[in-house]
Length: 508
View 1 (cartoon, rainbow, N blue to C red):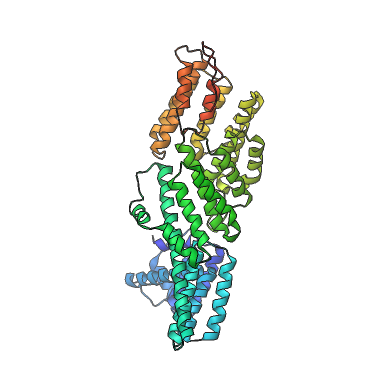
View 2: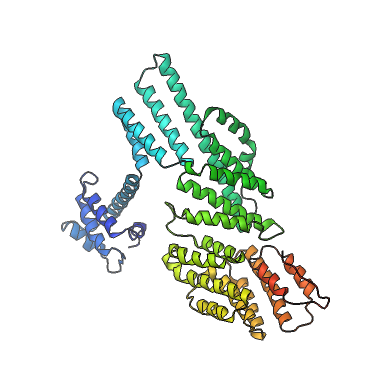
């Protein structure tokens, strides 16, 4: 028996199966005895639901000995069972969300015209909302409370006095203001999400109609009106600064203004909202680095932001229980690029434990390998280079995300350990084949990695004594190659060679 509902139940914990049993056997939710017996039999196959030996006729007999198998009856039971599981999942999620319970309670009290109980629960809901801190959903939820007040008043209280009429007018005005703030935050957030996505994956403009909407909205004018009518207008000021930072990404003053506002109002925001803003600050720095002539222009700023992001544990929220592996890798790469070796070691020691358990061991070994390699390469320590080599050998079944990093690190290790021979060129060519065949690598990443391999190959020939390689030309080629993670490494290595004209090569 192949049914989609069993793929869902497979994900249930033992406690969830127990609660589902109580749910189905409760007469409040289910009055079908057949369904109860049906589930008791089906439950025996949990958690694998291997139905190879499953006999539908035998199952129907266990439900009712007098009941002959009928395919239509069986399908109806499956349909009812699927519906019950859907209701159970919905109720479980609903019971987790205190806010949704507040909203539905207020709707129910409005219909029952109980003003005293309504006011009590309205105040409680408003208090609970204020405790969580400000984010975009905060303003949407505030608008829901205002609308609930208005609906209660209109349906249950007559507008016979000027005070009542003015009160309702004020409520609707607040409702509109909260909705406008929510709308502005969400539109800007969605637009910038698409912007970052496009840059990250080098996609053709996907913003389309969102860009047109953004262009037609006079945010500055809206902000001016909101400042006159709402104490929460500063939130829109922050989002406008965020938008302007990305619109004028080559103007660092816009970024600094946005960053200063985030820090200024940080105590007002929820943790999730602060995590969002720090993620946008990180994205700005990474994108700014990718478009500037000076590859690591924003590294110092990025490093400061990473420190706050880590210290406050903004990488953990309701949706994320682990430190994202791409973020972890970026932090390692940035700190090593800045030669913050002591800090890098402490970061690995303190934060590797937040990685997903399935990725922890491989990523930790790669991190220690990179740490020892870069420190060893700078200090010309063969001991540290060999330690790095040993950490690399510990990595098992590496995921694609780190596979290309491992291959490059092996090449750099071989280079620094003077394993420069024909075998190294073979490995470079094998890496090129790996990139060419792997469809999961974006074209932009392939282009960057192949550029590194081409420059690395020339360095190998140069180190082998090939006089056809012109050092000055190679240096200029490396200098003009933006977007390479190992750009500085290439520059450092080429600077170790002197030209016949005793050219002094300077790092940027």
